[in-house]
Image 1 (tube, helix red, strand yellow):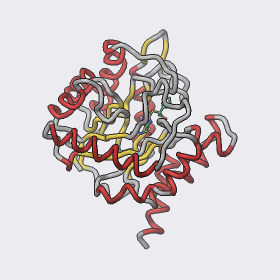
Image 2 (image 1 turned 90 degrees about the vertical axis):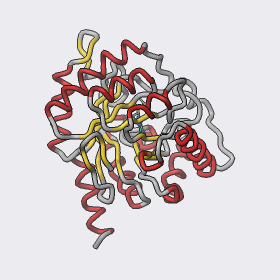
Image 3 (image 1 turned 60 degrees about the vertical axis):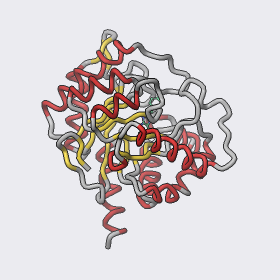
Image 4 (image 1 turned 180 degrees about the horizontal axis):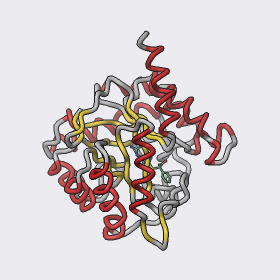
Length: 278
Ligand code: 7PM
């Protein structure tokens, strides 16, 4: 698959490193944020380490999707992410993705050189489908039930996997309606987005059922509460649990693993790949 000039072989596991440029990210504590604005240099330094450790995609996000987080303005989001995208593209031959749901950010990020649109709302915002279509870029459609602000208030499913499959069918059709070709799409089950611990564990267990779409699968479980609540560990002690679930997801068909812990994840997946393909 081609990400704005960067070709990635999705038959090999690929690792996406997270560079959050929000002041309140749960897992890196807004550490790229100083004097109320993003340090581009700090973000580039973090990306440099991730690229050296084997990340093939860097995911840049400027809107916190933390449960209960407040919305940011379009201007705020643009000023956080665009300079970081430009700097990373300038410095490294790596694909950059933009974690956004905002049409204006989709358009500007494409101009700044991103290779993938990663939308936790699967282009449900007004104008997002059209903006994404106009970029011609690959798009990751993530499943979410509800909105980030309220999604963790007693999420409920009759049949979890069936509902996620139906959601993907509907979003794939919505993309087709604006002439986004199927070959541009990736799917993500959306761990932690409108799901209880039990939902997240079941979803991982049965993830292979999402491979029948014959589209690449991306997963993000790094440092999330499904690990914390299972192990009773704070966010900075979730690495080993994260590696276990990354390997389990890879075995069930995941093509891209989104993580804060790139080096360790690259090793774990390379080892898993060697065994599965031996
Ligand atoms: C606070 C809470 C900050 C949660 C950040 C998060 C995913 C994603 C995120 C995912 C895809 C995080 C999340 N999670 N994009 N963006 N898949 N495609 O843990 O699971 O980084 S934001």
